[in-house]
Length: 74
Picture 1 (tube, rainbow, N blue to C red):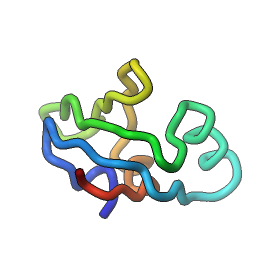
Picture 2: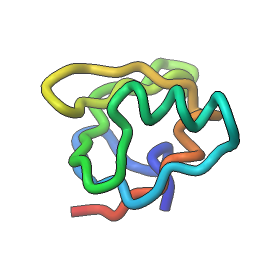
Picture 3: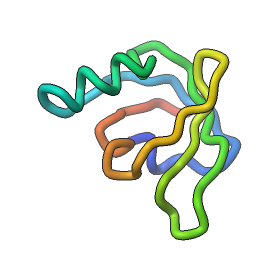
Picture 4: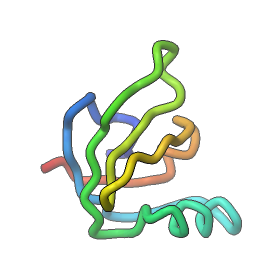
């Protein structure tokens, strides 16, 4: 499953970061690396963007970018 499929409050572990070139480097640079625990914190009223909690901070991502992050629910 991908990060955008989580429900608010659910936790997961990142298993893979897909995408090409700059997008993948950008996601990895923001801390979205495999084996990192994440929690879906908030979803905007129109379902985009989403806010996740990881590594002690909150990160806001577009749903399009979140679809590139594969996770396994805890």
